[in-house]
Image 1 (cartoon, rainbow, N blue to C red):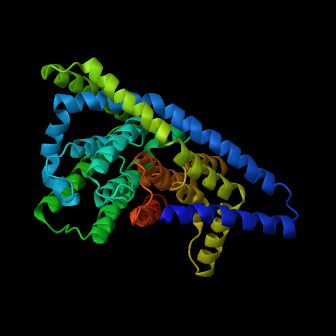
Image 2: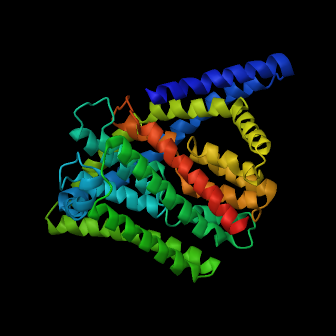
Length: 410
């Protein structure tokens, strides 16, 4: 229901703004631009779905081998202590916990192509446990908030963009991104737990979060000892070595269990193709709404309004130039990436705005895209508090990113 009203708001607000521009400013280009965006966004949505077909088929095929080989069940048992606290409605040891872990691990390593099919697999398994098939369950919402909060340990793509844009030290935003995304994820867990009345003040969760904080600190320290070139090589190699190790481990586990791994892969790959087809309408809907909103100039007006408000309160407005990236990120990953590159082009890769836009890009994920794709893949139409929790986690990430940017670069 929330997505429904947000989607409607995109069109209504965009139309009213365009009408005002036409009548009072004589802007005859705004309506053609909006219509062009509907066609281009529809094409983009289809191309994304088409591009996902191969990746989904690959990873759901690999997951099917792992499932039949018992790997997913092993992961489920290992993660049961913490997952039974965060996902109390999922039966202890259920295979979905393994899928959730694989998705989160892929996201943390910046492996988006692997994370999406693994996440869709987890959603299908949670839908099997869901008693109301059209309504998001509590585990689904917690899972999606963990995705939308965007915990990323190795933001390699952002480092590459900074290097291409001529940054003197492309990796200088690595630690700020790590800190901002950690706070975003932590806020997402806390906010969702409050909605779902999950008690976080227990030994298991406190030890897990404390351990995660130590791991983050260790990664920060370790990468801080490397120069920029070596850091990029190590992070890229580590992510890809881990990914290939997972594939080989799943295949070997299948062979050990005397599974016909080829047939198992084909079985899972067929599910991947069907999933890719199912999400096309949902992607078209959300990307067209976002495209119209952008083309009308509504985003520019929003930024100008925020700048005016900050100036009126006597605040520092240095961060405002980077806000388009922050506000676009929940709506569109590619749109936010374009905003980030534009900020570095306009202000300079090593400017405060340029660096902050990169921290925004790495601190959260594309909330509406993730909700549309993941919920759409299993036919969920009633999202309950998913959008609220996801956006609050995004907001926490934005505030953390601004504070951290001023601390490091202000």
